[in-house]
Image 1 (cartoon, one colour):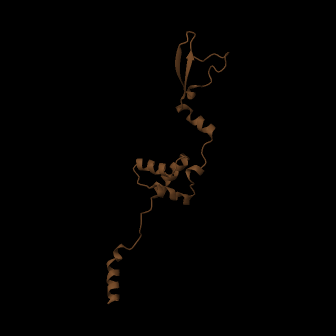
Image 2 (tube, rainbow, N blue to C red):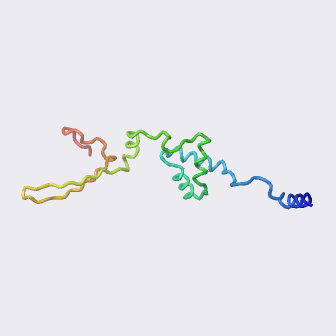
Image 3 (cartoon, rainbow, N blue to C red):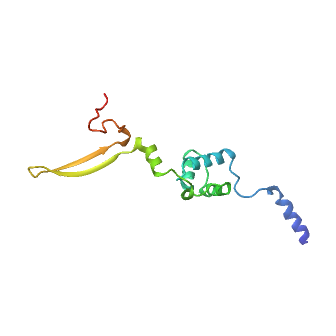
Length: 134
């Protein structure tokens, strides 16, 4: 009787035999993840997964984390740009800000807010004897 029942149950559930779990990610998504990680060395797994979600790809941070098997290390361990190179590449979009006060001869206080755009400094007029072009 038990043998008959075991065969009946085995026949009933043979239709779903196959791979279990989440399907593997495609090669296109894998290449996109690796490219994002290479081009943005400071991004972690969560950030890469979030960017992919914004592009319309459903990839979990755990899936991105599994790329260690491919040789991709965590964000903190990947080589990033040295500070000098970072400043050089970002200089066009950076702005320096300073705020200070000045006391006048009549003892009035002036508040000064200064914005400096380092990307706009091309070296013109860097010497007192040099004239600015234009």
